[in-house]
Every structure is written in structure tokens, then in C-alpha cells.
Image 1: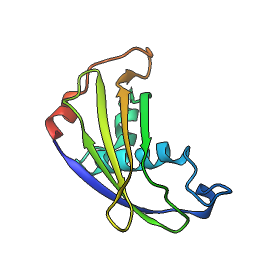
Image 2: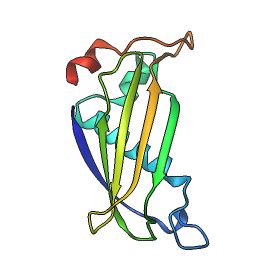
Image 3: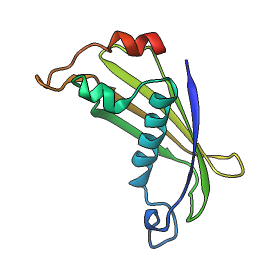
Length: 130
């Protein structure tokens, strides 16, 4: 399935007192990669929401392998783990400048109808892009 890469630079505010990227920021890094993945396949997340589809995160797993530091350039690799149903499951690898994998992650997001708040199937237009 489709895989994208997204470059980011670690901001000072994303680090902790020890100088490492704070663990809570990796969920945001995954989101940056995920939104870039959706955009690169030709889907507007904003447009999807305007059509009444929300994608709340229902599962998040993060495996920290090596630290990242202020001003590091990181590469977020984002990929689908399986064909979407009522959920879409992404995998992530985050690399440092030496191309070492520093963090791995998985997220599951549910397709949710904005009005009813109930789960729904993946929209056909998204499946067609995949």
C-alpha cells in the first residue's frame, strides 16, 4: 500500500528538561505524517470532515528506540497496515539524520459519522484512492 515520507525539524518547545523530544510529541509527529499521507493521495481531510466524516484515534502504540533532540531533522515514514474497513490503521517509522529508526508507531482511527457519532465504513472515494 502507499507509503509517504515527511520531514520535520524538532522545535525547542518539543524537548524536555533532559534535552530529548518529550514522549508526548510523537503522537503529534504521527498525526503530521498521517495528514501528509492523506493529502498526498489526493484527499482533503478538511473536505472529508465537511462531508460529515470524522477520524478519531482509537488506538495508539509507540515504541521509543532512540532519542531525538532539539533541531534534529526527522523523517516520518507513514504507511497503511491493511485495507480500511470501518477503521484505518497506519504504521510509522521515524528516522533521524543518520537514517536510524528512532521510533515506531501504530495508530487505528475509526470512521465516524459526525451527526450520529456512530462508526461507518470507509468512504468509497478514499478506497478508490488507495
